[in-house]
Length: 251
Image (tube, rainbow, N blue to C red):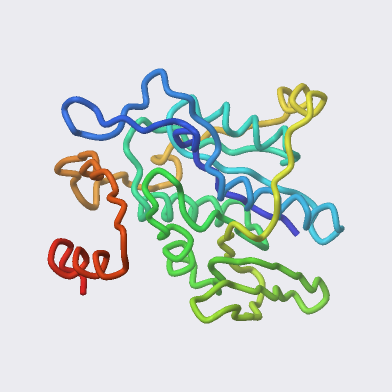
């Protein structure tokens, strides 16, 4: 079985985000970029499934400008067998990404597609669900545990919901999106980083995949959240209740 993993290049989680002066987006020039943390978890899970003997190949996929190759190389250094780069300088929104993934699935024919539940830059949490809809594949989102049955061609997934855990059984092929508690991603070792340089990265364009890139919506303005006021220390419970009632108007 082949596993395909979608990975996204985002502003590093430790970087303080700055809004562009013209308020059209966030500043990405001369800013450290890295793999989306949820995508790292998705890739780690795919690698663990392969190491357990339940998969034969892990293919990492990324979309965007030429710099995405660096992110793919990180994925290859972690252990992915090969990479696919869909190169475009256009802004990609979830539906377009889902259509590209659908086309790649039709080319590669994986038995499992794993994605991070969301990206930390836009927090959309939409792509996995959209791909499942386009492919008419079963899906399990927010996975905290994944168990595959090779004989039955089934995946059993524990997913986090507001009330606790929900367990789903999916027929393969299927789509899984990963949550934080699924695993702890490995670090790429220096020997594997060197090996990754010789691994194959296949390039496509959206046009070659018959995907028309068009904006589904328009970003009018990006602004920073209002600055928080300094906290106030109160001397009694009565004073706290008074402030909550008469100043904050929350009770």
